[in-house]
Picture: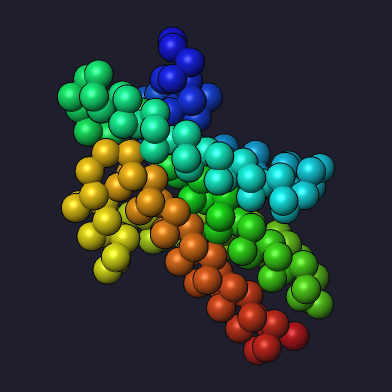
Length: 164
């Protein structure tokens, strides 16, 4: 396996025979939780930013070399997107006063990101359809991550307001 394929498949998770998207997203989520715990929000942000920029460049190289647009093993976009969702929800949950807010934020990060990257509403879908190459692949998941983060924050705030 080449280093490029290892990166684009997020350590090989995109090569899973069953549900590579879900496995990669869960792996990225757990990786993000560990990074947040041990290294902080700034480190995860820089990792998400670097992953996005490098992902755009590497996907463009892969598409130019193979002529294939976004094969199923490319899941690095999901990692960058779910990390953004996680950062948004955890930063809100850390200010919440109810028990298990961080755990709920982590679960909501996965669910809300998954909702937006599969549903692809509005601009997210347009970007994925119209922008070719790595920019379209990565930017659609970055926007799904931001939208998922905002949805999760709304849910976290509603739980605090109505249940506690």
